[in-house]
Image (cartoon, rainbow, N blue to C red):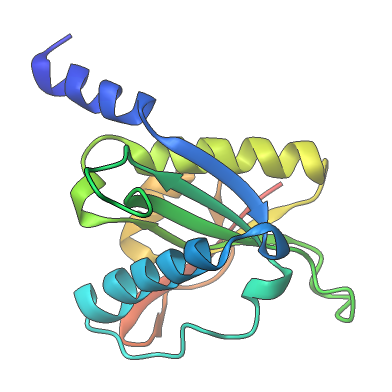
Length: 170
């Protein structure tokens, strides 16, 4: 193994994974999660939109934290995604939806996206076996999600100025 691979593997092994319903998140975890979403989706992607959409309170959240730094109240958030359950009021909405997938700048390039998706799919399949899973991917990530069994179920379309596509895995 080369030095960069060892470093990436070591960094992944040091992560603290948390899979929680919204009610089980601490206020500091919510604050950190919303801050990371704003930093990545609003600031980095220069995309002004209403991130706080009322869906977080019924969602499950996967948070990956890096190791503590000196004097930190909370370790740095490395990665995050949320999982929305099917809408029981909508007969057409029978899929679990993965969304708000992000890796913070400090933790990019170590394979964290793969690890997050693998871990989230394991949790979803254990908690809701047999339920199809859908996600609204940025179009350039079709290959990434395709490697996990997701296939396009829509045409590419723009959302907030960024090309997206709906993808689904049975």
